[in-house]
Amino acid sequence: MYQKKNIRYKSIFKQDGQSETIEYKGTGVLCHGETSHLNFEADGMTIDIGYNERGVTLKHGRSVLKFSFEKEVWNEYQLPYGQAILKTKLLKFVVHDEHIQMKYELYDQTGLISTVYIYISM
Image (cartoon, rainbow, N blue to C red; front, side):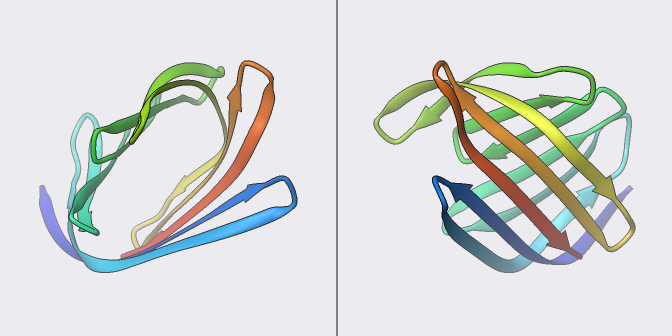
């Protein structure tokens, strides 16, 4: 089942005592199925959040991060200047009819690089 949604997306990146906030507003599509997806356009790129009972996939343009509810996951993450090997640790993922909340940590080979909070209202 496809539903058209008005999306308000907010993400907060916390790193080394600094924080950066990114916000988008737009129209998106929510599709429920074996894997549910919410996708919408932001700054000329598609953001897609797919989720099921095993985990979450977050796509932003060509970049993809995979998360498991049970373990940390190593990813090959596409950056504008090349690929980075990043480990994701999902701390929170809550889905309700009108919002999605997500909190995760990103690690490189040397340790924690960022904690990210995402809140999407629909």
